[in-house]
Image 1 (cartoon, helix red, strand yellow):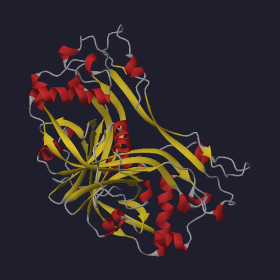
Image 2 (cartoon, one colour):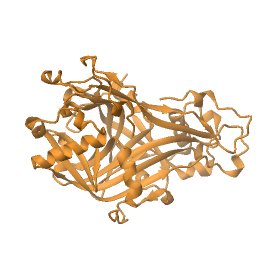
Image 3 (cartoon, one colour):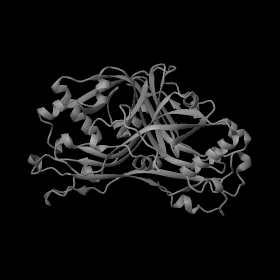
Image 4 (cartoon, each protein chain N blue to C red):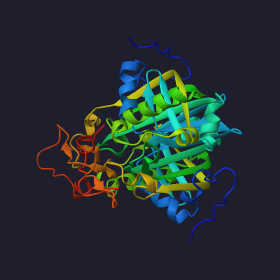
Length: 217
Length: 217
């Protein structure tokens, strides 16, 4: 069951509206594939955009950072936030300069932040955060002690509204340009992970775990 | 010769200040490697972050889009803008959950936009924009006609201030955790381009150009 996501002035895709999507079942997989989001907020009328690790928990985005972080403290005030994630999937080379394009999947999330104070809930969300970023790692690492948990701020941003924008198509040239002697096509873009490199201080008997070897998003 | 870039409250890196850089010779290569930037601006007190293709021309960031684009029209008003680019280079897996990290290079650029009106200058900047995104493509495609040039808005954002933040290091575990039986190391992240796919309508005698085959950033 997907939470309703009303389309209003704030989240409406204006340019190329047929690329816009408002179904959380389409938006959330785009969010979940991302390691980082670009978090936009306003301080003294100045827009600020900061990249940070993100993880989604139902209709919330979890952010973590230092208790001393300007961004985290600002998020904790409940100020309005826009978190955007983007995957660039291909360059589209058309015969005409004008029709060059990019295949991409992006999601814009609008909401407000709230600091998680309760230690047990912080620990639960810290575990969930890591599980989303690197599945199986939480059980294969030392979990935070009390001091580390205190130094970490967890903010959850309720996703009030969202939209996705997707281009997933080939070359769209004007008919009269199809005979031009220029190459046209798709140049795929991929993110690849690995091969993993052992820490210099790692004892030689500890192998690279399968969840690291096969890591992908 | 690099333009001075004063460090003030706006662009100062607060968290982990030793990761902060203010030299345009360090900041600009991070910008130039990026295809897209995340453009932050404020409308009706709401922060909005939109991904878009970017290209740098000296101390300006060029943005292009439709004359009908909400973002482009807002940029053209000279409203304050923050453009952020981010490269995630590796996941850092420490023995403790707390010391997990990411190697990254990000740049935050603060400035104000200005619409380029003059047709010859628009054509020059459109060529430069494409040359930065796909070197050698401008001379190997049909350049925009008058109608296409009119439909395209070019905004240049003067980079008043900027900062970069870089983490490029290995695992940093606490000494007392080094004997723990968990794997620790670096999982590199790379962006790869290609192999290129011909447009379905491409005549078979047109080969994939070398600048496409060898494309990288």
